[in-house]
Length: 551
Image 1 (tube, one colour):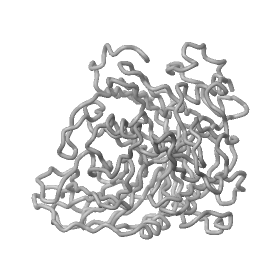
Image 2 (image 1 turned 180 degrees about the vertical axis):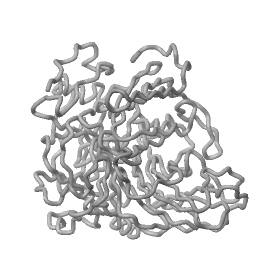
Image 3 (image 1 turned 90 degrees about the horizontal axis):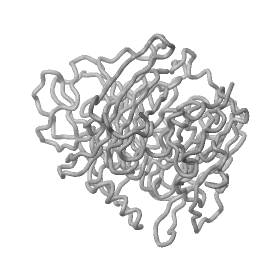
Image 4 (image 1 turned 135 degrees about the vertical axis):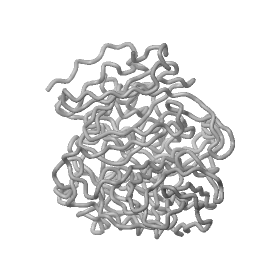
């Protein structure tokens, strides 16, 4: 019962049922969110568990499946989960961020129901409230192709999820207090692979096992907080095959820079001597490199890995060149039978250009971040609810942010940041990073074409350098120091959607905004009605639901 007390919390830890007799199948899960103790870096600390697991369980789905997850919040504060990369077509109600949903109160539960409609690929989920992500609660999320859709490579022997992230030994509440008091978090204390940190020469059990001669898929996601991580495997090439829901041209790489919020799927063949090998994840673009290793074993081997680790690349020019090597596979089918390249995005006229520039300032003695001089703050009433109940004017103003930043921004306006974008328009968004640090940015509800990334400042003349043929369609793009990145997309998914820095410190302190994409028809063809189990809070608490949409 949504909103009910936890009377049956531990009756069933996980339940999965498939109903295949009525359209797309349904899969049911029960997730219990609790605090626990773990020592990822050797120091016991409080973490967030899902069904007793850190990281949380892998969520394994297939295109168009209905996923129903009953989340019981056993924490002592409100909690939400978001599903990074899932587009939730016509259904921002399930996005699980504070601009669309009331957090699940402590001691209650809420049931998510979503469908990865016409999507495949490698994703992850995580807590979107406060700094809960710094304590765990994240896990892998994969969407497999339907059997009737061809995949541009042979079925692998097995499919592994590799979650890499930076990590702090202080609790999420202590880190939140740092930010609330105006302090910064500083550099991370370590790096984890699937919730563990190891050293060369340790007696750690293998994270993954491979049979000699067989090929395996590894889904590598950076679920961290601020650090780009380079991932590599001792003695093995990685063939990149998929990136955030898109099949890509299949090139071999010795290592991959995985920026915060990004996911890559690679094929690795067990074609070396039958022994153990190290996987390595190390930070990039920080003053001091922090790294960890994990063991990948050949079946039956007890030969320890070599202590000589593959070196990480140096500088960000290498990373930029790697980004430019990624290409959309135009002939492969994704979630639908038609080839990816049948969508000619480069021939669509741009109707609007939005330039979002990093902004950093001190407000009332505390550091804040934003876009174009506006630093977002969450509202007691989620933005989507205020809009749906036609009470927006009591909660936020539209378009406080401008499409073009001022030449010199010295102050930040701190208020809810909501931008109107006309339904079904083709928009160009340019992220400008005037700072010396690495950034990455994510858009909920969509995938976009990452057409360019270059040093310096963007001007319209830079469009001549855009990749208008086979840029990868994805949901998170990096922006290098003193550089810009451009994306193109059609805003055809009605709802309220979050654009955010994937640097969680910056996001928490205001570097995010929401785009309101409204269908003028108010029709079920364009957007689903509010779910009947939706938590209502703020000024809409206790109000009757508005008249539902019809076709």
